[in-house]
Length: 366
Ligand SMILES: *Cc1c(COP(=O)(O)O)cnc(C)c1O
Image (cartoon, rainbow, N blue to C red; front, top):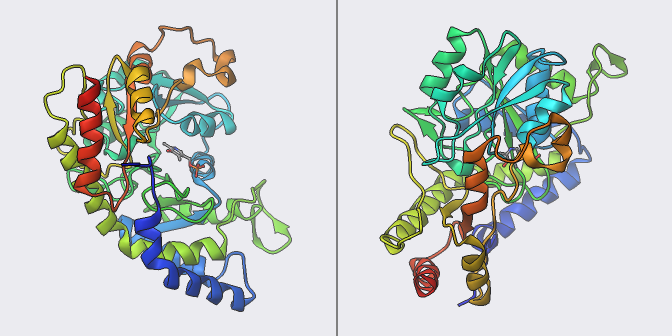
């Protein structure tokens, strides 16, 4: 059985007519940037995320950059980031001229360990950026309490976790301003690049609206040095078709994860994903850890089973961040996770037969 790492087919095939109707609606409207579709999608996504405001932007990285910008985070400021995350989290910090200060994860969940943050704070710390990695909510109660105690902003990187919750609150609704991504492979994906900022603060939402559109409210009058980071009408219209299905797709991901948990139980050397108390997991990725990662991946590839590594090199060891001066061994938990993680096939529409075939292949290897 050939099992791809990701297949859009079960999500997209049944929506073909609705998606092409959305395309035709935008095509015939003759209005392609910042119009009614974006406004509607922003309201619908804000309602889904249980926040007062969502602002559509060009991609997830820009969402994080604009979030930091409207909070006034910039040169001379330090921002707490996870030592293991996709590089976009760090790029947002350095793009606004601030300095990323890495904090190690809880190895059980791969998410930022809130008990390690206090030791990394300095008088220059301005913000904490939790990343709900792989789709699991971070321990937001502790993070928000610490932020309040030290007068820090919180910017959630919600790119992988739309619909996840911690103690009942949705990810993307805790922080002062938060960013998410609708990159095609994310849990809610556009057919191209797209992203959004979410916040409960009307003033900050307004500032994001101005910044994303050249720093301008009135055409050709520019108040601040802005960006071109607008969400297209077309992507917004397509996202509006998909958003009502997101909860169902999330349930399917959680069902696939439950099947994996059952079928992979008790294999020596293979650590399955753990979910923290109070957290929910929307399984953007189903990530296992094994010291024999390279050999296992090769074996799966030979069996026609897709897998990926998220991520092989932690940001502090990337060539791009050489200048920050972090040596090998400076964040050993992130490094160990990077050396042992493997993401198994995960997509809405996967069947128990798919999962059993993946598990059989893994058992045959072990
Ligand atoms: C995908 C992703 C981003 C960036 O989103 P883009 O839309 O690709 O710019 C940021 N952070 C994390 C954790 C991501 O997975």
